Image 1: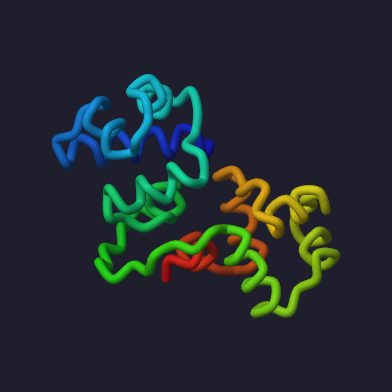
Image 2 (image 1 turned 180 degrees about the horizontal axis):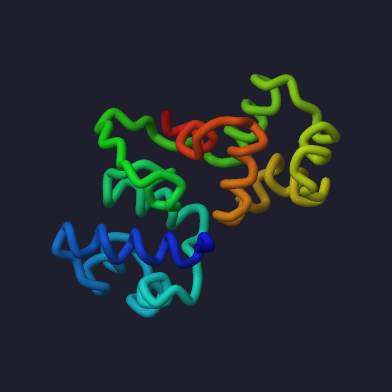
Length: 146
């Protein structure tokens, strides 16, 4: 099962558990209902910012929403997620990794790294999973939520 179908399945499941429809979730996310409909139908994935909002709305772990784990760790003490550029720079320093070393581990281009470091762009969800594997941590830790 790929990440698109995993996220689709989890969003539908969490919406049902919370009695939400597409319109309610779209309002909570601040997006058009057609955007949420695309997530529910498995046509597209949320952006990084929308993903973080979904985590807050559903109060679930990133790893659960991404389908990495089947057990949702309901913590309730989640930290506010910093912007990805801030977190990415902190992780590189914490793990004492150069962009070169991370490039060797992940195959990501230096262009991606530069855009992430400068805050020009945040990674796509599938790239978050790959980065978490490279850092050997959870996606929640990767994004600074725990």
